[in-house]
Length: 131
Image (tube, rainbow, N blue to C red; front, side, top):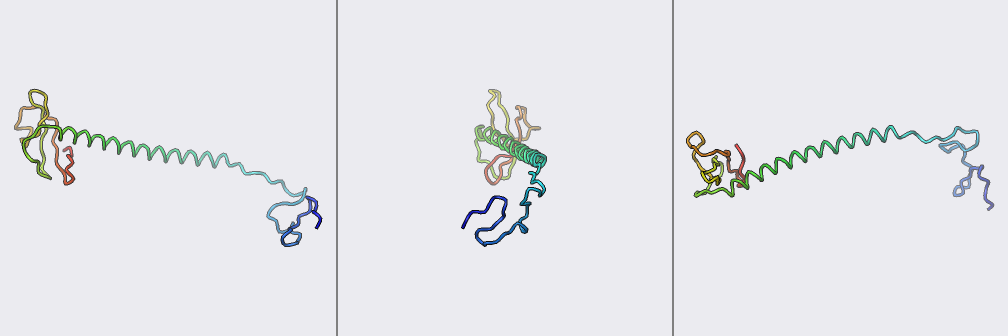
């Protein structure tokens, strides 16, 4: 079968002229098809996504900082000197002795003259929590 001219709208598979059922204009006098201006939509989407990423980044950054503080406290307490086995759930006090060496004690800060570095509680995962 001979090829139809470009201006003729013919469906080869169904063997029908189907210009009337197309969702767009098919002749030269039909309204022009203009692409939508999606720049506003795109810019709004990019702005919202960037705000979400920044918010999530700030949350992760804060969580990281908290984790690093926990690590530093645990590192400090576990490397301190103590001559007893700490009991889970109890609060202990960390001091610097005269040689500036940290040590862990059950004596509260109001009963001791050493430099108090902080009080810590041993939780069930054997992590020290600053009190």
